Length: 92
Image (cartoon, rainbow, N blue to C red; front, side):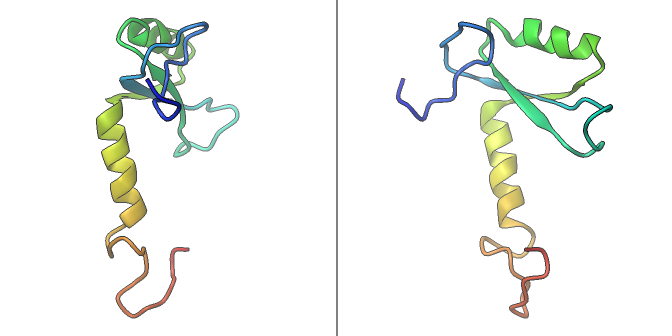
C-alpha cells in the first residue's frame, strides 16, 4: 500500500478502501451536497448502518465506480477542458 492508496475511514483501520459511502446531514448541507467516508469490506456494513440510522446515508458505491463518475463529471459534456465548443468558460 502506498501513500496514495485510499484507506478505510473506520477508527484505527488501515485497510485499503473499496467503497465510498456518500452522505449528508440535511440540517447542515444542501440536498445535493455529498460528504464521503471510505470503507473496506470489513467496515462497509458498520459505517453504512451508522450513517443510515441518522438518515444521512445517500449512496454506497464501489471506489472504482466513484472514481469513474468523478472523472466523467470533471470532463463534463464538452470534454476534458470543460469549456463549451465556442471557447467560453460558462461553467467554470
